[in-house]
Each structure stands twice: as structure tokens, then as C-alpha cells.
Length: 115
Image (cartoon, rainbow, N blue to C red):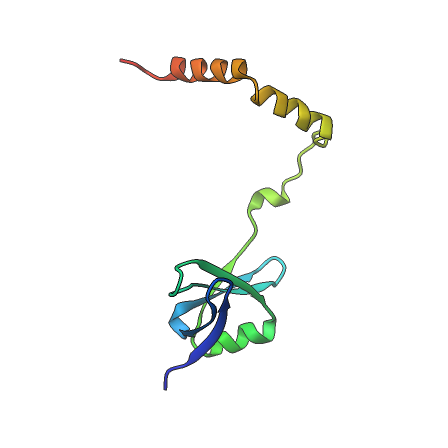
């Protein structure tokens, strides 16, 4: 007997899925879980957080489990000053200047081998 799982798409509402239509994603770093699927109605990606109990139930019903970890960069310690609002405003002013983009474009062209 095939398992039918009801899930909610934010666009289409309640949809019926088979176990092969979903994936359970489990974060090894904090234990959080979610189920994901691509809605057959609208084609949109859908993800909903779930409890450990629901996770285990879905996996026991044949839903594929995908374990993942946070990027290693999150554990890196950077010994640098924190970004301030003034830094962000300075950066915004710098990149909104046509002169800055023109210099960057010229530098990019100069770095390309034209031979």
C-alpha cells in the first residue's frame, strides 16, 4: 500500500505527496529538521520545519533523509573590527559612484588576456 502524505504549499494549499516526493533535511549541528518538496501544482520549492517526532515518522514511512552541516566558515574566528553602520554607509557611497564602477571595469579589462 502506497503512503500518501498531506503537506501544505503556500501557493496551492494542501497537496498530496508520495514518500518519494519529499526529502527530510536534518542539520547535524543543531538537530533542526525540515521537510522539503517541489510542488507539483505550481512548481515552487516548499520547506517546512518539523519536530523530531514528525521527522522520524516521515523517515519510517520511506521519505529520504539528507543530513547536512553548517558551512565551516561559521566556526572561523576573524580577528577584525566589527562592521559599523558608518562602514556600511561608506561602502554604499563607494559602490554607488560611477567613477568606482568605471575604475573596476577598467581593472577587469586590463586583467583579461586579449591575445
